[in-house]
Image (cartoon, rainbow, N blue to C red):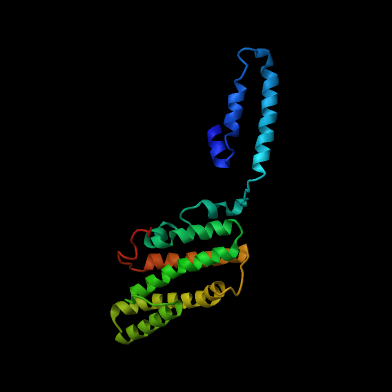
Length: 221
């Protein structure tokens, strides 16, 4: 890492560049002072950096959670490809978890789950609903209506839709509603459990749903 890079990343206001210039002053004319000047420069640089770093805040990420902060495919590439609009919230959920912000992590995960809910509804040709409750009601109504048709394809698909709609109802009751209505907070450990569950459900949706081009379009700006 260069001195310029250090200045830029830590916003040290050119401290290291200033010291670099000072190191060259007078040394060619008086080489016998080189060692003394070097010691003085190091002490001065240390003092300046310490003074400026007192106004900076650094956050620590525990080694076992570093992957949550750095990994760009926390739910897997297939989920990223199928649900591009969820990528930002997946990444933000990971970063929140890495920093111990359990409630923030769960809030982002519920936004991710909403993309899954909409995709499930789209698979049943439900274009729009104003709320989770409305989506889930329409999904269940559609499942029951499809069951009455007894089509061959539906007999193959029914278990998937019933299972996932049941999982989404559980998410709504257990996590989504309490989180969005400020009824509870989550520790990092609790949030990590929610993270794993949401990841598993989104992976199942990504691998099982036949999403059309609109669902798998590029992430919105």
